[in-house]
Length: 525
Image 1: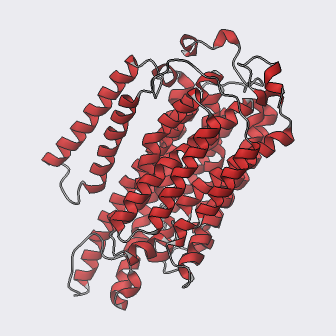
Image 2: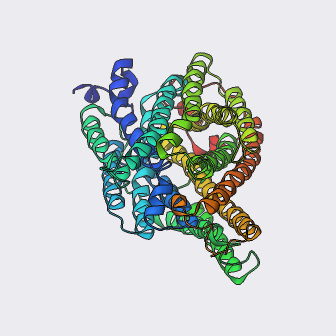
């Protein structure tokens, strides 16, 4: 290819790409995104059987999901900063290799603890994939045109989230496969993605000399967030809210995060650039993304458990029952993406999406173990519509305000806080769910004159329990899930308030900001 030699090095080659060339390059990226999303959704309906087979607890159930979110969150800003400095294509390929290794290790796990560790390692690759896909697309397509391509992202998201639970259910319901294939199944997709990226992805990299990555700041952030999440998982269960463990963990986490801010202020190349974070659009998008992540990940991850344990459906049936949620994501992401490209405005659609998200969670907050499936489906559809209209467009709003050379750090910063919100949401809501389930099971067993064995909400292998106990356990899980969605609705309100205060802006049609707007000082206000 001789084109890159005829233009200045600072000008991205993607600027002259045709729609067909962009789609060809997107093919590998979208498959990468599909693989990353599939790694989470394929286990959503299979987890009750997986944890039951490994004799795990409700807390371990939550941590199989949280572990991936935690490491993905901690590494996201590092991936984003590396993408501003080194080959984006190579970084995506490295993330895929890490993901594949984590998947294989998870598939061979012999205990819940081993599975959680493998999922944590897998999350490093997932964090890279989720961050880098957004970064590479931003380096290829101007913000104004990016709206319609976000529709393709939404389609892949819907396919992975609809197909994942169905595939996971089929795998665990097929005797000659078994639950381990929930982790092995992503490997061939990842290999195909590697090949497609090698053939189709050609994106500009603006190299800088004498650059140092702020690993200290990244380590402090990861450690602080990790300690907070571990505290959330065990507080009020293993130890009390007002206890030396709480004071030590919360105080230590806050100290580490304060130190991280100090380090980031002084770092030449901070992992989370504070001048970008202080910009109004970025700051409000971070708050909204944090809320959307908490509500979406924290609420949706327990739907598979609700349908299987609370309602008694098989993993395959549970996957089919989540289709309304994913259909909503697909419909709204495609339609809203095209409208945004046509109009050049984004704020009204983010606000509308968060209003619908709140309405969906408000409906789901009223469900119990006997609620009509039509009603549950309507609530899930609204949640999906809200997520599809808001999640990707919050990233787009930030990308529109920063120069191309900072696109990786800016995109990954929003993704970082969204993932952190998801990890916190899963941990908090999982802890609340486990506590309420344990209390209700203990109370109902005592009322029925059945001896209480104690534990963390009991075994998740409900089918192995006596019929009378099965009914009590299912009712407890079904009724407690509604409370989870009530908390999710309250969190969604926080995101809505942040979105309302977003400044109105027209999406630019150029790949980069004009030269006069590129300096960090000009990002203020």
